[in-house]
Amino acid sequence: MSAPIVAAGSVKSRPAPRRRSGRAIADILQLLALVALAVFILIPIYWMITTSLKSTNDTFAVPPLFIFPPTAEHYQTIIAEGAVLPSLRNSLIVATGSTALALLLGTPAAYAMARFDFRGKSALWFWFISNRFISPIVVALPFFLLARDLKLLDRHLALILAYLTFNIPLVIWLCIDQFRSIPRDIDQAALVDGAHPWQVFRSIMLPLAIPGVVVSAILCFVFSWNEFLFALVLTRSEARTAPVEASNFMTGFGVRWGAMMATGTLIVLPVVIFAAIVSRHLVRGLTMGAVK
Amino acid sequence: MATADYQSRSVVDAVATAPGGPLRRRVNWTPLTMLLPAVVALLLIGVYPLIYALRTSFQQFLVTKPYLGTPFVGLANYSAALGDPFFRDSLVRTGVFFLLTVPIQVVLGIAVALLLTSSRWRRLSAVTRVLLVLPIATTPTVIGLIGRLIYNRDFGLLNWAFSLIGLGPFNWLGEPKAAMITVALTDTWQWMPFVALVAMSGLTSVPPDIVEASKLETSDVWETFRNVQLPFLLPGLTAVLIIRTADILKMFDMIFVLTRGGPGVSTELVSIYVQRVGFRIFDMGLASAMAILLLILCNVLAQLYIRIFYREIEA
Image (cartoon, rainbow over all chains, first blue to last red; front, side):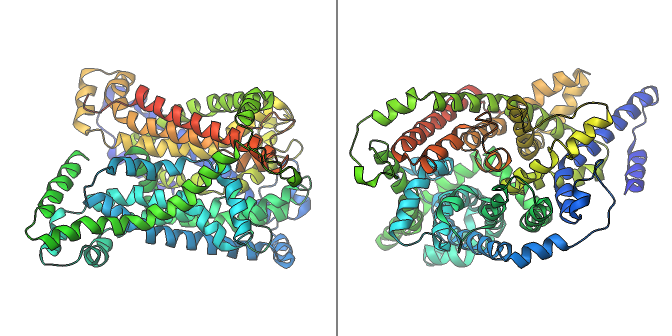
C-alpha cells in the first residue's frame, strides 16, 4: 500500500529547491492527518467486528486485545436465539418495499416537475421537500393510532408506508435534477412523433435517468434500513426490524457485549460494504441534496 | 442550474404551443396524472398525520385514562408545554448540543475537504474519501451500542488510549457533563464526514484558474480560502446547517441507545423528552403540542439560515 504512494509523491514533486524541506514537512503532516482521519473513521467499526469475534473473557481484557483467537460463538448464540435473522429479513423487506414504492410514485412526479410548467409548481416543490424535515416524533403517534385502527400494527406494510414520508421527497428531489440534465431534444422528438408522454417517460426518459434513480434508491434503502423511531413505535415482534432488535440489548445493563457486537455487525456490515462499493453514487446523492 | 431552467421553460412553451387541440389537452393532463400518485400518497401519510397531531395538540389525550375521553382544551397543552421546565431544559440542552457539535463539524469538515482535495497523497486520499461514507451509512442504534463498549470506564478502548498518555480513567457516560461531550463526539464521528463531503463538492466547483490566480497574488493560504474558496462553500454549508438543525431537533436513535438521555436527564435532547412524554407518560396531547412547537422552531430556523447565510456565488 505505502510503496506506490511514496512513488507517486516523489514523481510528482515540484522543482522548488529552496522550499523543499518546508514542503516535505507539510507532506508528512498531511500524511499523518490522513492516517489519523482514516483511523478515526474505522476504529468504531473495526472494534465492533473484532469484539464480536472475541471470547467473553477477551472482551474485558485490559489493555484491550488487538490479537486474539477468534471465535464464532456469539454468532452461533444469537442465531440460535432466533430473533436476529428474522429482524434482518424484516429490515430487508421493509427497506426494499419502501424504496420500490417510493421510486414507483416519485419518478413520474419528478419527471413532471422537471419537464412541465404549471401554476404553483414552486410551492409544490417546496411542499414535497418540506416533508423530509418533519420530525418522526410529530407523526409517530398519529401513525400508531392509524396503524392500530387499520390492523397494520406489527406488519411490514405499516413501516413501508411510514418510510415513504422521507423516501418520496428524496426520490423527487434527486430525480428532478437528473431528468433536467437530459437534453430536451430527446423527449421532444418523441412527443412530436406522436408518442404519449407516459410512454416517453417509461421507455425513453426513465432508462436515461437511471443514474439518478440508482442514487436515490441507494439513499432510500440505507435510510430505511437504519430507521429506528417509527420501527420502535409501529412494530412489536413479528415485523420488528434490526435496529429495534439491536436496541433491545440495552434492557439489561450491557452484559452481553459479544452478542451485542455480533448483532451490530450483522446489521451494519452489509450496509457499510454496500456503501463503500457504491460510495461514488452515495456521495453524489448526499451532496446533490445539500448543494442544490 | 440556470441554463437547465431556461431550457425547460422554453421547450415547455414549444410543446404547449404545438399545433392541434388534442395535443394541448394531453399536455395539460399528463403532468397531473404523473404528479397525482405522489401527491395523494404524501397527503395521506404526511399531511393527514400532521393534521391529526395538530388536532391532538388541542385535546386532553391521556392514553392511560381512556375513560376521560379526549375533550378539547384549547391552548392548555401549549401553555403547559411552554411552562414545563423539563421541556425548556431539554430545548436548552439541544441548543448546547448543537453548539458542541455543528461548529466543530463544520470547521473539521472543511479542513478534511481541503486536505483531501489538495493532498499529494492521492491514493490514500482516494481511499479516505470512500471511508467518509461509512459513518453516514452506519445504523445509529448500533453506533450507540459500539459507543457503550468503547466508552466503558473499566475496559473501554478510549480510556485505554488515554492511559497511554497517563490520563484517566474517565467516566465518559457516567457524569452529566462528560456524557454530553461523549454524545457530541459520537455525533461528530457520524456527521463530520457529511460536512466534509458537501464541502468537497463545493471546493471542486471552484474554477481552478481562479485559485491559481489568487495564489499568484497572495501567498497567504487563509486569504485564498476566505476570498476565493469560501464563497463557493456557502450554499452547501447553508444546506448543512438546515439539515443538521432538523436532524438535531429530531435526534433520537443514537442517544436513546447510548445514554437513554442519562445520567439523569443530562443528555435528554428535546425529541427524546417528547418521546418520553408521549410514549412513556402517555400524555399525547402535551407531546403533540411540543412536537408542533418543534416543527415551527425548525421552520423558523431554516428560514433564518437561508436569509443570513445564502449568498449567490456570482454576487
